[in-house]
Length: 267
Image (tube, rainbow, N blue to C red):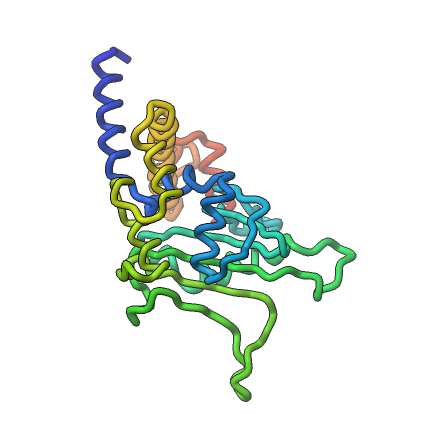
């Protein structure tokens, strides 16, 4: 690639990076990955505590489904605290990405990894599945929506330690911690953010040479991933046509034959 093309790609990447917000998972994952302090700030605000202590935080943690052909998940932010509680934080810009069934699936996948064969069911830790959505998908104008199981006949909570929380990313109230947090998630410029800890992290990835290199790599990897997903989607559509062979689908979609075979098996 010529130096002119490299310069053009860099300019395009920088333009993309300048518009990224914490609502964009590329930036959010980098800001919170292995960042205990930032994750403690995030969770304490959402859980409405002041004493929550994070022990581990990892971005883009994969949970594989042991069932043949079963769907796996990749968690945006996985965290555990000093009380053994597990947190799955997902940022969803598209409403369809925060479907209620998805929250149920994430919760179940986390639960299956908590207990060893010899442990009792009562030993399972509390889990929190938290969806930060760009829009108010529940539509009541609230900052938070807590989802709990309830015994219908008595109205009492069914206390099984499972928690699902939807955070309204469009909520605006600069005097409320959630409002400030969501304001910061919507911000393009770190100079406009309320929480200094988050602003400093965003500034590093957007405005320093080292941070920009990391961001450019992430942006390019995302572009490659999107191209791959488009190819897979094309192959899935062609798999519906039984007249085409695996080799033909692979050639038309621009994928290896074994990748098409895997898609066929998953169907």
